[in-house]
Image (cartoon, rainbow, N blue to C red; front, side, top):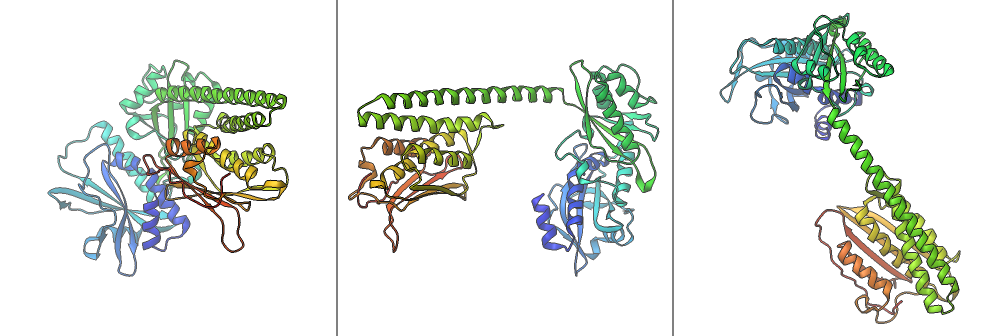
Length: 510
């Protein structure tokens, strides 16, 4: 759809409403292509030379294509655009009398004006491959008649329906099953697949000449569901585009129905009902929902267990007299609590993606409290991390815990105050994280690789083994600057390059 928008914006002066109507048509036109057994090409006039540009193409799934190559981006000039010009100028459907030959294939051209609010904004080319023509079957005749009615609705601006009444990407399609009803709602024709879909719901009689709404009421196990489907059919017969509904007979089968009004030139010709057996699809949906709920429950329980472990470590640290042992327990509590934040977020997510900005914000508050920074060290986040997969979020939150905690604890000795800024951003498939403080800076002859601090060793291991990232530490010694700058670059694409290149030799060690 973005390619269509680009072509229209670059080559036409169509309004937003007209562009939206053409996008809606392209979203719906597979139905018309399949029923016509023809390729559909969307042509827009190019000014000032009067030629036409093909901006979209659709091939039928019910028959052979008319073109072996894609025609999007192709222009046709005056000598080849006669049918298009007639349809554009006169706002009527025009069919060329003689077929055209292309690559040895006879092709019949038909031009359908695309009308919006009484103005022709484009032309829909319907090109049929005439090779191997034969007498059409009853199914094909029903398809072709319905296609003719839909084409007439395109030419009067009645098809497709309003954007808000269409469910993007949802079936069913014509090959899944089709039933045509007359203005009174009686079945004129049911395709074999359409009849099979109703038989799966438990219908055993003959549909021909019967009211479809009556059959639906017999099959539905829920009276409210039956009323919704019957109302959908009634709306379509009145010329409204009602969308789609699902029908569950209680016999283990679920069928999705979509009703399309057939009202060319303001005349009610009944409706087209498409049916799709979605029993297996809904069964899989239920399985996925059940698995998702189980996974969320697991994350919730893991979070609770981690919080319990953190609480036990906190209690133990308060009973330990040795200052070094107390510090070790408090650091362990902090690490466990940071992992619990990720699982808490995952326990409320609908997938295995973490809204990491929320995790970072909560992490900063926790670290400012437990690291002794209190109100004297202001810790803030700018930029956005976006959503991250769970396998990336867990090691990253551990790395941030160590680096931010390190900055708060060791960058501001002797009770001095300051700031720590965490800056997140994305660029070309890479997550960039900067941690900048205005504290004391790195010690003399600092080397990340030679550091014996457990926290920095954890960071190095996670950065190289889990994140496949690069890490750089440097001293901020520019004019009016002080403190430490840490940069973390994490490739977000699978198999992206990354390595540990901890840099920064400058004064000191934390």
